[in-house]
Length: 397
Image 1: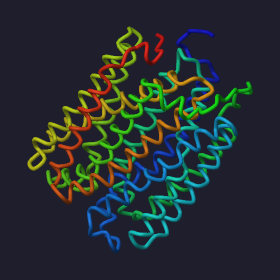
Image 2 (image 1 turned 90 degrees about the vertical axis):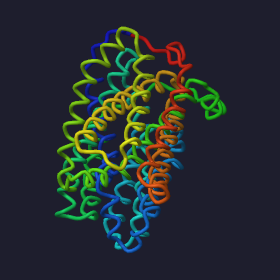
Image 3 (image 1 turned 180 degrees about the horizontal axis):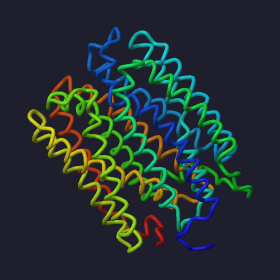
Image 4 (image 1 turned 45 degrees about the vertical axis):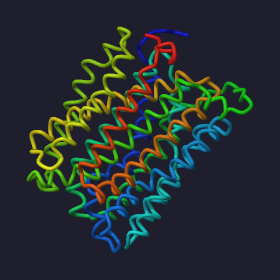
C-alpha cells in the first residue's frame, strides 16, 4: 500500500462527501445547542432547568443505545445501506421535534433524532475508503466540517430562531438531512467489494483492547464537557452584557482563529512524530479552560470569555480530528464498524450526560458547579491517557 501522504481523487471525494454527511448529522445537535436552553424554557414545562437539560441530552441517550448496533450492522449489511436508514430516522425526528408544542413533545423528537445513529457507519466507511497514511487528514476534514457546522450554528442560530423559532430550526435540519441522503446515494464513492471475515465475538474483542478503552473514555469525556458547557456559556455571555443574537461576535473569531492555529501547528507536529504530545497537550488545555471558567464563573467579562472559548475550540478541534483517526487505525479492519460503534456510543452517552448533568448541576450549584465537574472529568481523562504510546495506536507518519 502506498505511503504517500497526498490524497488520491477517490480519497478526496470520499472525505468531502462523508464529511458533509457527518456535518449535517451533527447539525441536528449544534443548530439548537446555542439557543436550546433559552428557547426550551418558553415551552410548557420548560421552567425546570433539569428537564431542559434532559431534553437537550436525550438525543445522546438514543444515539448511545443504537450506535453500536448500527456500527455492527454496517460490518455485515454494508455501510451505505445503514447510513441511509439512519438518516431517514433522523429526518423523522427532526420533523417530530418541529411539530412539538410542549417540552415532552420536544423530548420525543430529540429521542427519535438520536435514533438515527449513523456516526459509526460513516466513520467506518471513510476508514474503508482511505489509506492509513492519509487517515488522520481525512478524519481531520470530518472534524473541521463538524467545527464549521458548530461555528455556523453559533452564528446563525440566534438570528434564525428570532425569525422561525425553535421549531423552524428543526424543520431546516430535517430538510438538510434529506439532502444528505442524496449525497450518500450519488456523491460517496462505492464501498470496497472485498469480502470481510467477521471474527466470533467481535464486540468482546473490541472491548478488550486497552488502546480503544482509552479512546472510548476520551470521546465520552470530550463531548460530555462540550455539551455541559453550553448549558452555562450562553447565560454567561448574556450576563457579561452580550445580547443573545450577538453571541456570534465571540463564537466566530474563536472558532476560526482556532482552525488557523490548528492548521499551522497540529499536522506539522504530527508528521514529525509528536502525536502523543499533541493529544495530551490538547487534553491539558481543555482542563485548564474548565478551571479558568470555574474561577471566573460569576464575574467573567467578554474579553475573558472570548480568550477561554478560543483555547477551548483549539483543543476541542484538535481532539475531534485525531481521536476518530486513532480509533480507526487501532481497530482490526473487519471490526472497524464495531469499534467505531463502541466509540460513538460513548460519544453519545457523553452528549446525554453533558446535557442532563449540566442542567442538573446548574440547578443545584450554578455555573461554577458545571465547570468544577468538567475540570475533574478532563483531569481524569488526562490521567487515563497518560499511558498512551504511539505503538498503541499504530500511527505511521
